[in-house]
Amino acid sequence: MINVYSDGRIETEFYPDGLLGSHDEIFRAVQEGSVEMGVYAPYVDLVPGGMLNWMNWTVSTFDEAGIAYVAPDGILYQVMDEAWKEVGFKLFWSSYFGPYGLANKVRPLIKPDDMKDLKMRVSASLGFVMTMENMGEGTGLTLQTIPWADLYNALERGVVDMCWSLWPSLVEERHMEVVKYYTDLGFGWDAANVCMNRELWDSLPGDLQEAIWRAAAMAELRDAEAHRRVNLAYKKQIMDAGVEIYYPTPAEKAVWREKANMPAIWEELATPWLDEHYPGQNMTQKILDELDQIRETVGG
View 1 (cartoon, rainbow, N blue to C red):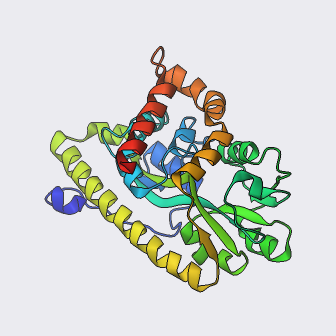
View 2: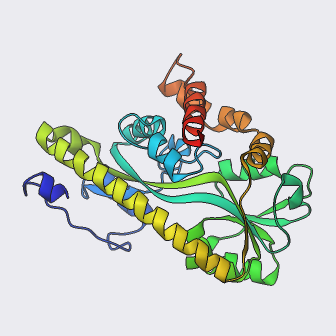
View 3: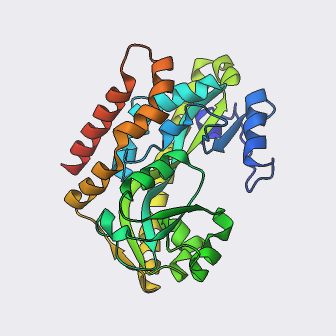
């Protein structure tokens, strides 16, 4: 689409499946300008403000994400563009894999107390770990850091009983074969970011910047709809595999959200960076208020 909208003045060549290197190698290549664009998970060791891309209990649905993440006015787009600017990138759009739920092999998870004495696989994603620690407080839930590649075997052998997961992961990683229950909690949202070298972006004339923006907007819409549709297909495959899916009511989700104590997690993980980059603006509260409004608007 960039080629079309720029009347052939910009040509793009896509290199899939790590042909240009690992995630971090491609990040460095775009940062130094030897590669022009890339798609990334904004891990905080690369992007100090990257935690704002996927703080828990921000958005839970494609409709909410379609407001919060979309340029130029989405509240999460605005703060993530600032985060990427800090490391020399321009953010264009986000590719959504969808909501995180909780999968397990023991019992349906309807309320936090249902995690009693379960063993859960977690990664090193600090915000997710802190959220699960809070939601599991007092239940006897134990957390174990296990590499993603080892999760199937860990579930199959009973090393762990549960994990957080996405609809695609249940199918593509075959986790639906080794779990019995899935709660569509939507307590996290998975979004990768498509970015360009910022110096290159700033050097482009206005008409070419406009061409890239138009292509980015179209790509985001197309990508979001593709993921939404494939998630629907995956749900059917998961049910056909015998996994029992539970869809919590808004009131039930509210219990999980309250126990997560997200204000304290924001205060520890996000507020220091926000206060540095938006001094005197109380940006944490501004973001949370905007996300509450989005949730109310979509829910209404």
